[in-house]
Length: 131
Image 1 (cartoon, rainbow, N blue to C red):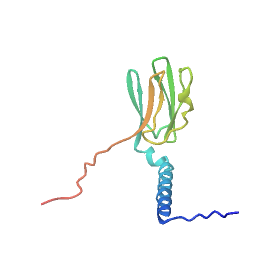
Image 2: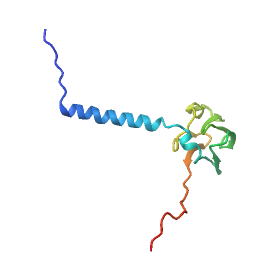
Image 3: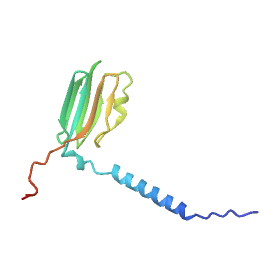
Image 4: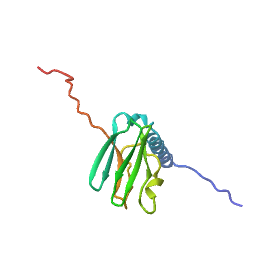
């Protein structure tokens, strides 16, 4: 019977270290607490005939008129979800709670989408004087 030997080369160790580090970095990035975003973000809702903007720091239920009926969206604790819609298969309701910017929930049959967007504030303060 022959024994199998496994020997890792230097390149194998570098490969594992680099991709292990990337995996840990992405995990930390996606586990950032939602409160990091909640004070400077808004919920941007688009419907067939309108665009609506709501603050993410206030709990509220929003009813939006879509192509085939009403879609209801709930904002709570800096995150949002679709809680009801007139669409036939209700896939949008299965999206869960979203707390990160640029991750939309879309109800295609009703034409309603919602996404968190960061507020861009311009710095108007002078930080130095040149002579």
